[in-house]
Image 1 (tube, chains in turn yellow, red):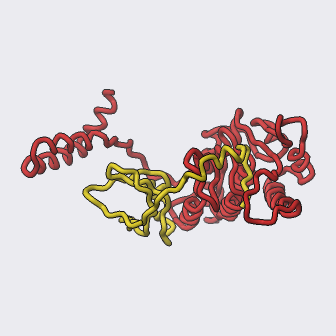
Image 2 (tube, each protein chain N blue to C red):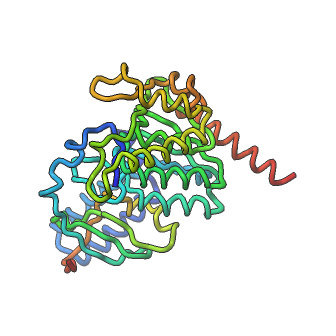
Image 3 (cartoon, rainbow over the protein chains, first blue to last red):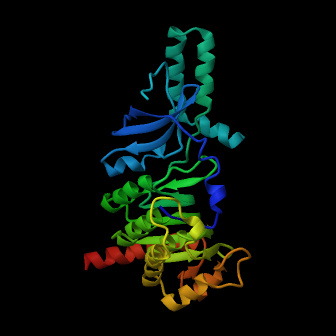
Length: 78
Length: 253
């Protein structure tokens, strides 16, 4: 793994030791599975979409980093 | 404010909202009804426009590859962009792709992967370097069929440094040299810049304070042959449309 960037490595990797996000997988209505990070307050942040259909990836709702809200209680599998 | 309010109460939406409110009046207590209204106010309506035949992908921040970077980095995740490029290639409704770059570099393998995908896309592609297209952003920028750089945008060409190496492979000079050759070969074979000139820019000693390399602003990148033209959004979209028209003309015969 090589990073070719103008940002100093120590800045890029700052906090990588303490950064340990917990991801969970949920099925997505548009197809495929979403890898999400729980943000609390009935919302999750999309980390990754897992789908074999390329057109699923064009959906702006599942761009990495977008926040999805859900209603009621959802048991997130860890 | 008046404009947005008028939009929000556009006739079709309003009717729908009224129906829903009516339903809620029967079923739910008033407090929840208020909440319902607030949630609906948060929705803004987007001006309707005919479906666009071009798609755009913005590559911003760090190009994230094999390793998830800590959250202070703004990243473009290549595992998401690659299937998008496949969808662009395969979807008959999409006729061209505009790639907007404002990147500080990132993972070599991920950057080269994106560059190769953009290069081998059969539909017309145009890239536009906005703020910066540094390091591994350079091959991504030149991968498009035609490239633009704005007047004030910068591109930094510098070698892959030893400090840029993270554990995992033998940290030999030969290895780094090979990785660098991949980048140099891609850039020189996809732009007008010669290998000699590109290596010269890469190892220039009097440009950067703490590193060797060259910073090129707008026109400089065009002068050395890295980028095709200085221009902005309007020119980039016009050029893409021109290429789409030319391609369609060629197919009809």
